[in-house]
Image (cartoon, rainbow, N blue to C red; front, side, top):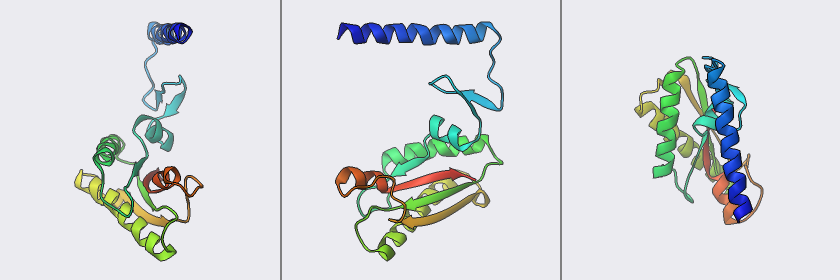
Length: 161
């Protein structure tokens, strides 16, 4: 346990010294990139930026298209991110788990994608920048027939066009 604590302290000092060195060398972050927690640079306004700095997906309860409190918080962050990048357009994918018929899950995925679309539109994002599509159960994120897999597959995903 003490070794783990010591390792965390050393890692913290290392990261702090890297940040201090970057600042001392005039290390302003370029407007077209930002730094990640892992130390790499990413291009602002890209899919990678959205995933790392905001989150690109929200999750739904079984047989529901209602946005949870966590989903709303993620979408609030996505809306703020989209306002920073007014030339960025997105596609929202709606997904379902494997239970139910193909047709039912396509309709449920559509409701989920539309819930995300509507939330972002109500947050002030121009609907001309938004598209949505349902994949139903056709593109699972996780293969499996248990609640862990089902929970990961009941999702709405925001993709930068």
